[in-house]
Length: 322
Image (cartoon, rainbow, N blue to C red; front, side, top):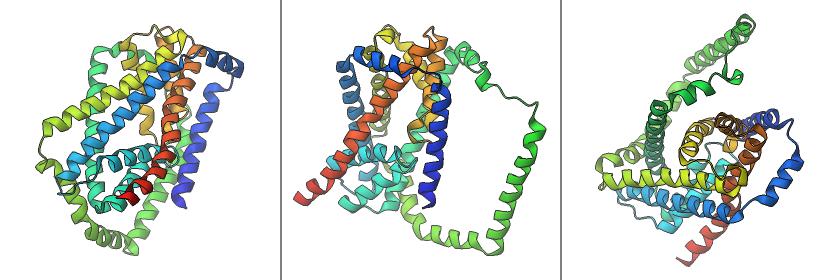
């Protein structure tokens, strides 16, 4: 129940950001823009997204195989689709859901799978920040200008007003820690972790024993490249943005990906805000940027809204045959 409440609150936060960004937008402009969309490029984008998920399944199988388990690539691929579909509903819930799918249909302990997922997430995080640093190094003026926008500036003039709520939050955290210590809740949590740590640590340690580490990194590069191309092809689908260069797409993609670090479903609101301002920096007017952001976000999310339920329906059918 708490997880759903947590997800609902962040969904409301995302919708609020989205409303602030689009509160003055004329919906008729979007209807006219949809008539001009070249949907063949949307299909190309969706196909690139599905191929990236296939490579993600292949990369995950390399980690699982190290533990002497041999899951089928079909189940792994469908579980990755379930991952992204779940994230649209419960932020960060997708990683657990794909582990539960593979645990159910391939008899691999969930905690071992979570260990491999941890390695995957660390790999992706490291790769993303490496790309981010490279882009930052070569396009520092871009980031300097973006962060000079009023929306990114911090106003310390009213800091004393915000100080009291901040102190209350700190006091609440201290009180929670005291209560947990007083009633030995930390010890209880620790004992539960002891029971599952061996499986989890085994899942993490696979990277040390895995064969083909070079292949693993190549798959990682391919996944990121396909994600970028999936995003870039949407520019061709909307006529006012079909002349945008690949480098602009790289910059916009890299910067907008930061929105997904927030625990908001599909980065709604925050992603739109970043994309609109990035495109504005490169001479695309706000209205065009707003339309592109809606089109790009909607169609890339549509992959999971359509294929997620299909994957959930196919999993029991495929495995019943087995």
